[in-house]
Image 1 (spheres, rainbow, N blue to C red):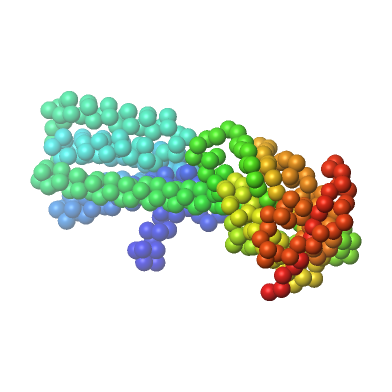
Image 2: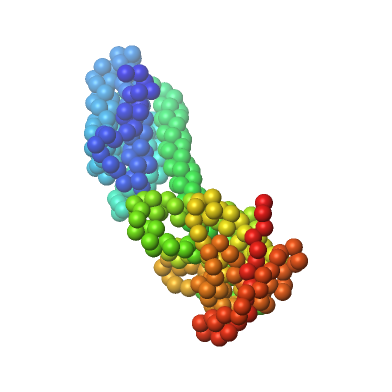
Length: 401
């Protein structure tokens, strides 16, 4: 096992342990602190051994081994236990260093760093332990500073200035490594948040038009309700769908509707009209809401003709009804909400679809007169529409490609 593999092993938990997402960075912080403390202890052990202070070297070796034992609970996912073990050994090391080497050795800088480390190694739910360890470190630091003259040097192995520099350098590297861990964790969290935001936006745009979604997000409007004086409404229905679905496997039925309505969605996007919703085997579209569309009557008929061509390609028969007029539009519901339109013009369009014929575009007389001459209009005998009485309606002749 190489150095890189060993470090990755020490910085990870067992494969059968699943840490909460929020504790992963704290587990790595404990592991990194342990590794640096272990290395520093063994560096001092090596220095003392080379200078001939064997028993002092052994004491540093023992402290280093004690630090490593904190990795055992970390590997098992016990982050809090590992952090407590690390601080316990750290306090022992500081006491050991202050007693033997005195204030001038610079070992007091550990205490200053431990105040910061306390808030990095303990999980957020253990904030009490973070405050406790930081407070103990701070109090010991104040005491050591205040009574530094009472901490004589009992044992000298190296120049105190060199000792202070080595301690400070090591601890700066530790803080740098911990900072890298938490910056990486923050960056990953921000990336995950951005991805979640993007996906939520996509889901929202699948339910409501983009302009309405922006109003909900940016303006914090509690109620979306607008009046549109002139829009086109189209209803499309698959003829004989109930009998068809009874003969088919459910997967085939869903795949068929998905393919058909997905092609319809593409046409709506191309022409700038809004799909409102699907209702079973029905499909509802509006042109001119929520965004104004000056030529919505033309766009709607063009979409209807494309729908008929698409239905033919899928070997499906559809009926289409189109009308225009004033509508009220808005968001309804708090769960699975959707954008909808209401009004007499909507009701007439629905009646035109149900009273139409397969493979034809059925429109009101008022709608037909608004169309340019390029569309061939065929009047049909007056018919009775439910709730409207006798009305003159027309068919729009399907144009060839």
